Image (cartoon, rainbow, N blue to C red):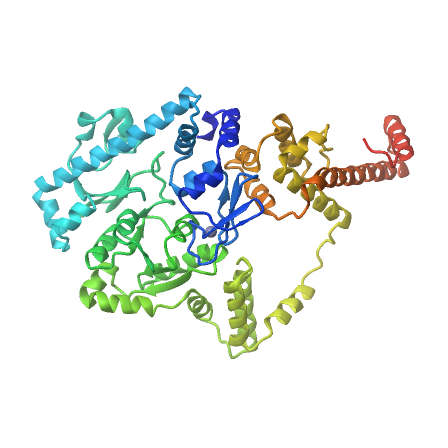
Length: 566
Ligand SMILES: [Zn+2]
């Protein structure tokens, strides 16, 4: 999507935008130290302010959950906008005309698609009231008229959509399927669960058959509006109903979610026929302090639970409590709450094992901890997983508990395993020193892009990492008034983005007047090392007699000028 908008326009937009005002209008910023403003992070639950917005850099960063970005990112994350929508909104606020016809088209077409799905949802909803066997199904599942309305439940009759709506738009929203060149409605003779995003817009559907035909459940395909791994069913209704969410429960099916909602458990949401993704979970940190996963008690449920744990581990923040609830075999949340009632359901939920308890319990499942061999296997499999965790309280807790459970000094154990490990190739110390200087120069450049004007030539690209430095330098040198946030825009959706963002948030304690000499000093060191490396290479070639006459000339020139730098 990003390619439709010229980079120059994005640069201009981010130059004019004021991130501090933009954030402050949504999340009041308070404390100020230097150029940094702080607030409690809107993207995860916390009590201390670890969300910082830097006015000079036009860049925000959360030290708790790692959320970061420029003004466009903030609108995308906070207002839940698509990239083009965020650019459009920012442009309107600043009073810039959106330059690109294609982009206007894109925004307009997204709006058309939302509007279309809104109409389709209303159509299905009306059809339901006319279709007694479909209504009977919901009634038999115990759903009230009010709940049917709240969730806009509906019924898709036979092939009708093409005769009612624009075919091209239907196709773009995934409402049509094609078979042997013929189009027909994707959902036919199914009861319908419209899927809304967290702003309440209709983005797709799930449909269930009323007879025994297959597939029993069918979802909209991935479209411009709908990405399964991003959306959670019911979140809109949950957020609308609860001003505060002390906990959120994640279940697997639409009917489970709706049924729990009707029974008064109004804080459950469902994944959409996919396993839980890290995106799902991270997007929930801003709403709650406790996330409970509810799984069936069978083997499939246990496998799904372990997968969820592996998704949570690398991203788990310290301030979120995770629990894993398992239902008795043969029950689903809907049947279980009907049988035992809300109070019992909630009691089971509150007593469900925490992430730590579940982790150790599952690992120890078929290991005999009374034997030395069992203990070693247990420690090894635990450490393999704990290693993935970011440093923090959870990691510490797991390590301490691992030590207590096995009565072992885990640190010493880790150490002994390290020394016993096969010899690794020793790190080239000069190479790592060089890369750290290059990283330092890049950190300075990304935080103070105007430094680019002091360097007239790109770095020698033989060094690893020099090409990325040169790309940043090129952009910054071309337009010396760009902020950090505007530079990072060039790496949207690219793999280097995270790395550059981590450099952008590092705290540098250099006074402004010392920046230029600090930067040039680092560059000089890089060039010196690069030159020494070239000389070394040529000397090696000369020693074994494979040096060319040109190389020999340049070698002697370099040795003569060894301490001069260009
Ligand atoms: Zn955060």
